[in-house]
Image: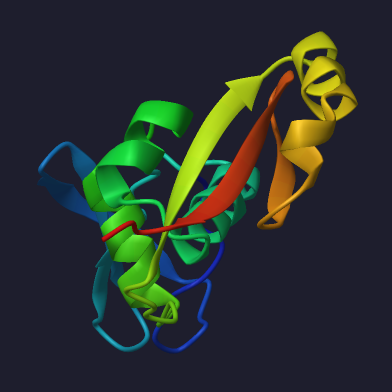
Length: 139
């Protein structure tokens, strides 16, 4: 990453001032401020963040989302905290989900038994589709 100016005062007069933890350090000649190059971290595509939060709101657990998307449950937990997501609590229903390809999805909806009862949500999941259905707990 290229440094253009001091982040403290905006001056373009700075010199190299050593290396700390494999990162170049600089010193501004105008304000004597020390700064270094920002570390480029690994970022996850926003599609997966949105999909993980959507699945969380649909009632899936962190571990279930991890198995589906292949993203750490800790990352999902951090996103939920970061965006302050609260899901509604309803103890009478629990979500069940199936992952189907396009042909299996069309066969699922051709069966009239699957069309009655509780509603379903179909969401895209890469080249497959996720079908989420809420079922009432039986006593």
